[in-house]
Length: 191
Ligand SMILES: C[S@@+](CC[C@H](N)C(=O)[O-])C[C@H]1O[C@@H](n2cnc3c(N)ncnc32)[C@H](O)[C@@H]1O
Image (cartoon, rainbow, N blue to C red; front, side):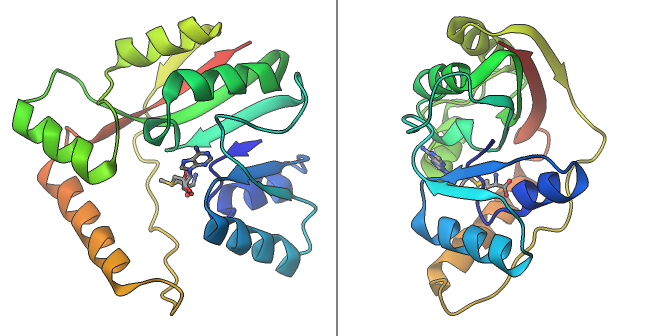
């Protein structure tokens, strides 16, 4: 399962490259529509559902792997991790790429980041580890690849309000301004 699959880029990749049976979920109806369009256009048997990771209408022990690319920071982390744990099969693995700070932040910088991104907190590695453990996960591994960033797949379209492009510009500007602070780690853990 690809949690917060957005337009379905990763879900499609996993389906094509690994012939994985993939389900993508996202809370945002526009993202869901775009992801569904992508799968239809490319004739991929990837199932796309609109729901929140905090409450997924699927049975326990459904997935071997769950991937989450920059999603957990935006949701209620304990609720989402509890649900991910429930949905994984025993021995199944969660791989999450998440915003991670290295040291407590200056109060004003933290406030700006929390307000802009709508996070409820800025988490350090130890905070993420505590959250994974609290949800019941084991074998927690943390890594950082030299570069995971590619040029984002941006399609300018009339469906997207102009102010959203301004928000995107501010996001890129914040990444430059807070380089080294707005960092990430890749977390992997098993049920
Ligand atoms: C930063 S985007 C990442 C999208 C995609 N994973 C990627 O890497 O391109 C965060 C995504 O999480 C989705 N999202 C936010 N809250 C969610 C929730 N509670 N349940 C499921 N998806 C959620 C958003 O709609 C958005 O598509």
